[in-house]
Length: 184
Ligand SMILES: Cc1cc2nc3c(=O)[nH]c(=O)nc-3n(C[C@H](O)[C@H](O)[C@H](O)COP(=O)(O)O)c2cc1C
Image (cartoon, rainbow, N blue to C red; front, side, top):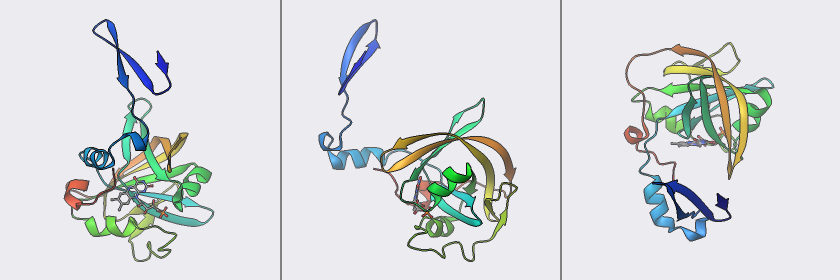
């Protein structure tokens, strides 16, 4: 049973009431940041194509969410250039950064609105879905958007894996290796 601000969960055959602190002002801001930054993440370049244009941005808010069908979820900033492109075309490609690709991840982590030339000089090929595949990626996953949900300042996209490829060898880049922060 749920009511506003309260989440009741069954535990050991009785109900326990847990205060559900969802509002920013009710949570200690520094502690929230500290705790959310203990999460571990990978780093990916999400590429997209729409109306004759291509783009790619670095993302860590990305994970597999289903085996069958194979689904991924990615949260995309509402004020990004990429979100309307992904929603309109209904597709995108996840490029897995290779270990050591911190500089490329930092470059594509910039806003295309503020850095319209960020893709210039980035070696890519265009995949069958029209989205860029980075030549220096470890692997890529072509996705088709199946569901969307509002997620605060971002939008959550749940997408089906429709094609995949391995490009390189080695290990994937992690947030821990890159030393970037994008949580909290
Ligand atoms: C380490 C790192 C992780 C990021 N993770 C995400 C993410 O998961 N989702 C997202 O929308 N933007 C993320 N960003 C910001 C984007 O890379 C980018 O700056 C922004 O979304 C706008 O991209 P665009 O305008 O090129 O579409 C991240 C940036 C960095 C540096």
